[in-house]
Image 1 (spheres, rainbow, N blue to C red):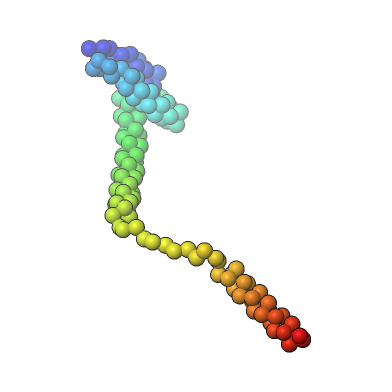
Image 2 (image 1 turned 180 degrees about the horizontal axis):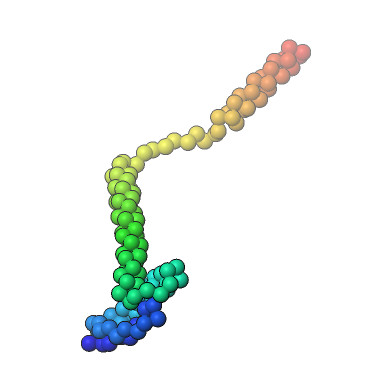
Length: 126
């Protein structure tokens, strides 16, 4: 069983872990050390046990917040998946788009009416 030396709050600890988990332990120790450094900067020197307790509680609080965000995200994701499944299960709708837009149609009708009026004038003069 590997032994990993970690440093938290300026204090070294030797910790055993499972084979292959050294990286995770080192990463967790860095997180705990960052919280301990933050506490030391705010409060100053404190007993080792209290510093570790407070740093652990701060990390637990952050973890609880992240778990809440994860649950909310999972609920939102499930809702979106349900909407996608519902949309996919509906039959496709046929949407017809006019070939000539309405504005152009109206303009063409007005031009045709003017042309006919001009033709009537020409016939009347002839």
